[in-house]
Image (cartoon, rainbow, N blue to C red; front, side, top):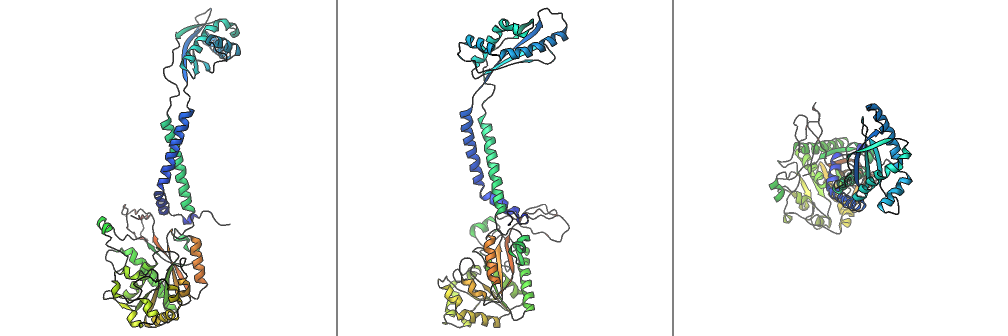
Length: 477
């Protein structure tokens, strides 16, 4: 039986992001709860009014003994409550008020503590009815006093008055706000639960557990444009390790992936073609492929990068290369030009690149052609490493054709992006091919953290080996 909730796959950043993106749902449900509850409460509200009087109860033949008076008052109050709620008293009150039915009132007599004083209250839906009822009860009391079996005497201390305001004040605003708040809170919990149960890869711990693939590396979220001015003009269009504003953590993540690639190449020197792919678009595969190639070149390796995503080529955009300087890769595959003419060698770019300068629709024919197979074979002999950027596997079949033509494949998985089932399908597809799955790269990884040494928040990365308590905070601004 599959787990509905994997606690190791819970990421606080993903939950907060989901809640913020859908906070309008919480607010909308809360507002609907307020409006509906206000309407219902207003319609159901029935004001009640209470009229009361206070009487002193004394035996008809008082001895002046206080404690005795209290005991008499206690017995009289109990009997009095039975009398005022009896049918006979009800009929008397009905005739007094000229009603056919018993008045719909609540009548109660209570003894004030440590005294022989009785407080008699009548509550009704109409203030005049409450006042008239309490008056009618006391007028008929003496006529029915034989039912009490007591010679008690009632003396008025405080006359009954007509209530000027209801005793259950109508406060729909407060109640409706409370109900709306409860509705919003329940909706918030539902959104959190949905976020937690979404079957995507959210943490490093579950890559191997859920995907059954090795975690090749983790690339934390890196902001392209950090200042307001940079955000407005979009001065940085891509994340490259050659950029002076890139953080050390990003560079270290790429270098760590490069080291593992070098290690695998060292184990099998003849295998040097590495394919970088992803499940869907916008998972960062082109960024990973280009930066790994640049990292290898910085180590003095001869690298050829092939942008095989001929539908949406991205390499020339990331490197800001003018289209007119690029010889389109399709010309090479069609046999119109030679390999030397197709390779782009930039002055400040330490790698050789074979790419397209525009999108093509017949990509499947190009990828499946013998010319593509021949291209990869020649590049393997000319370079230490051949890095191939391919189209997303779930969108087109181009990548499947390349799987049997490369040595290794690297699957880029963006955090909380593609569904686990789709990633598993791609993993299975790779494992069924001749290409060895080198591992998965968890990209654009975001977590919250609080660094006990800095007590600050932002894009700092901290030291994983430090002795202080470290909980990371990354925000996608």
